[in-house]
Length: 285
Image 1: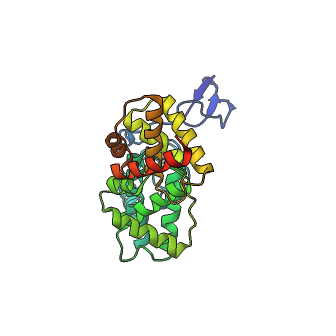
Image 2: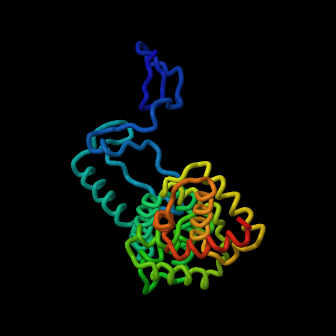
């Protein structure tokens, strides 16, 4: 008995009797049919996603110049198929909205990889951008700025510690432009964002400043006490987290200057000093 992997059949090599058909492919999740497709090793397409301009539902005409029986196509038929491939590629971005989404989601992928955010955050940002495009909020504005604002809104919605400075630095545009676009999205789309929890910023700042794990746990306890004392409301979460880390370093005897924590948190030394004094008075440290 022989196995034909391309047809999914098990047949007899002597008489041609097919013992089993439609067998399940158990090999790797890719294969290459010809030299033209050696760079395209996908056997099944990508799953549907809102972060793709056509949702990942578009069809593509393969590059193999053979018919269903495996015979090579004639010259005239090959020319017709090549023309169909060309129009198939052009038709995917025929409308201006598709071209807009293609450019925006390409930028979104780049920002997501640069900021190391999860796929769920990227999907949420793509959903927000699609809604903004439907309401004509992108018209007359920078696609990059709206994309960056959508990603920042997604990070705020999923409570991922990414600041406006991080988004602006990754997108290479001014912070005030991202902030302006973000305020536009909140106003026009009636979005409600959760309050940022300063405790989620501790790990980010500590890893940049090389603070020990013991000091991080002490800083989390300080922030918990500050929240119970209701002195954290209205404070910048990055500045409050950096101040709590500085207090923890002082209590644990770990050498750390305010300047290093200020650089790691992206705030000024004055902010850390003011929050440090407030924590000491409120918590009686």
